[in-house]
Length: 111
Image 1: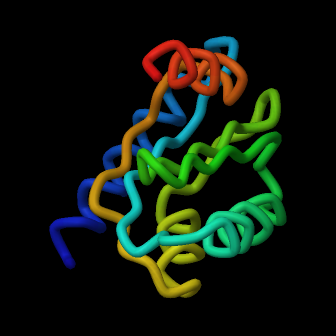
Image 2: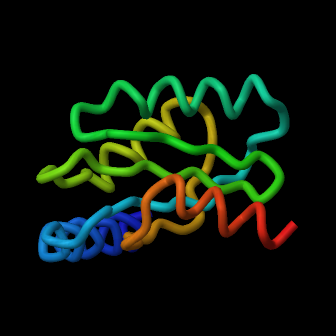
């Protein structure tokens, strides 16, 4: 668990440095989501974060993406905490330079 938080802290620093790009998002792989209600609950919780512009949850691929508002930085620890508090496990967290719309489109193209 300690190692996970060290990784998250590093990702937050990366997100801060990359804030000059068009769209910065935090992408998490989440275990434990089994139904649409699970996905909806996570989306609702993460949408309330102050820096969140958009949230996308893909139940089949177990992916949660939070896009930052322009000029703001997402807190990876806060995102992880919200997901864990909701009863799910975050197995991977990464910062990506894509918008939620771009990620949705690329996932749809893969199907």
